[in-house]
Length: 246
Image 1: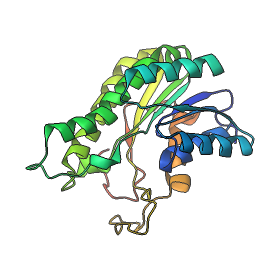
Image 2: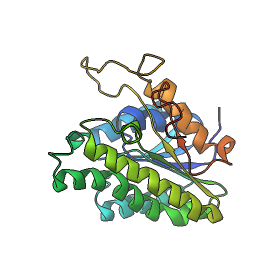
Image 3: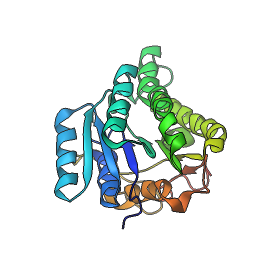
Image 4: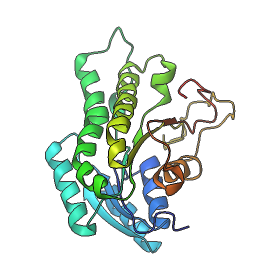
C-alpha cells in the first residue's frame, strides 16, 4: 500500500474497464487521480467510488481527440493538484477497430489514429512540462497484441496500436534525459461487458481481469520499482504473444 503516496496521476479512458481499474488502484495506493473520460456519468461514478474508499480524485470530461480539451484538462489538474507525475494513456474509440485491409478506408484508419497515437502524443506533450519537474515522471501507453500478432480483420486497430509502440520507444529515448520513463502495456482483458465474449486463445486459457491482472502491472510501471525500465512493451496477456514483442 501507499506505493504512489504524494503522486498525481492522469488516467484517460478512466470511466470504465481497464482505465477505471487503474484509477481506483492508483487512488488506493495514495495517488491523487484525475479521472478523464468522454462520458460524464462514468466520470462521476468512478470519482464517487474513489472518494467513498477514502481516496482523492478529480473528474474531468475530456475528448482526447480535441487538443483544446486536452489542454484545458491538464490545466485543471495542475490547478487542483499542483503537479503531474504519472500519465496513463488508455482512452481509445473501440467502435471502428475492425476491418480487413482490402476494405479499410482512410477515414476509418484516421479515426483509429486520432484516438490512439495522435491523442497519446498530444496528451504527452501537454503533460511533459509537469512530468519533467517530477522526481520520476512516468508515461504508460496502451498498445495491443493485435499489432504484434497481425490479427486478421483488425487492420486499423493494429496499425494505430503499433504506432503507439513506436511513439513510446522514441519518447523513451528523448525523455530519458528528463528522468521520465515511457512504457507500453499490451493487455488481454475481459472488457466486453457482455456474455458474448470470444474464447481465450492464450496458454493460460482465460482473459485477464482489469482489476486483478492488468491494473497491478500498470501500478508497477508507475511505481519506483520500475524506475530502470523505459521503452518497453509489457504484456499481461496470459502468454498470448510469448516473446514476440519483447
